[in-house]
Length: 451
Image (cartoon, rainbow, N blue to C red):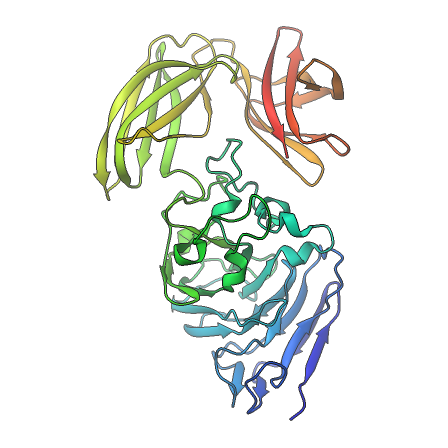
């Protein structure tokens, strides 16, 4: 038969199948160009509103391949918002989405719902997958490796530490997957428990530019998902096992079911393995506590402190557990804690290799304090997570390292607790800069990196 195409338009649009209908791809041809396929509109402009292929039939055979094998590329989306919405409801079973890459390589996504979800008006699973081609022509070939340039909308970094400066995209495949049980309107009240398999194209793990992906990345991939509540990749360990050109057996509980996924190196995963790292005032002391999910060759922890997040001093060390597959809790007391300060952990292996945690703030000042605890840039803006012990109003200034003023935002309202501030950085070059917050009673500064 002739090859059939179905083109989907840009915008908030959909193709609907009735509750009993099936989307059937029927062909005996299996070679490239002989099988039918669905192609989302390939306009390179960014789509910001969902373009849905909607399957209202909750049965697992609502997408059916007849005559063709499971390894044939059928559905080509290649954008975060070109999505398959499958009204899975309270059903269980194995749901196969026969995705294709832009170059017609089959990358089937499979979700086995083992425990049904519940609640919601029309609960559905929403699927999408894309690589650097989703941002064409904005992403030049030399930057294909850099996932930071085309992250999903809920992902804030690709770092090897949540507030560090190290973009670890070289150790992640050049592709993201969306498996969403909490899409607006179509969310589950209680998400299902699922086991996922992510098919991939080995070409997405190649160098793809300079510096390019790590050598042999395709042979060491495992799954990671981004926890958008706490902005961590590694609040749980890596999942699944590599089998051919897929990572399978990715078991996800309802509590750990977040939308954005990638595949990363099992040797150098995206962030460090801290489940928890916090500080709290206890009398006149700050108690620092942290929990590890697992440890490998961990010699010791070094506790570091700073008053400006630039200059750091060591205030203590604690021995690590060496190797452990169980959760372990640690604690350290800082008795010099009269003012708000920054803290971070440095974990050091037996071979001397060390990794830094993200930065936290804590202190026992009676008047409170203000600090920038997280900073990241995305889509022409710098975002700041500011923590304060009191309500206040601060003037914000972005300076270069020589003290030149690049941007100002006067009279920013800062609430007790956490406040997010934003600064326009369009036209400002990549590099190190300084953010300055000041009010009538004091000021603070932090270095930030724009990339």
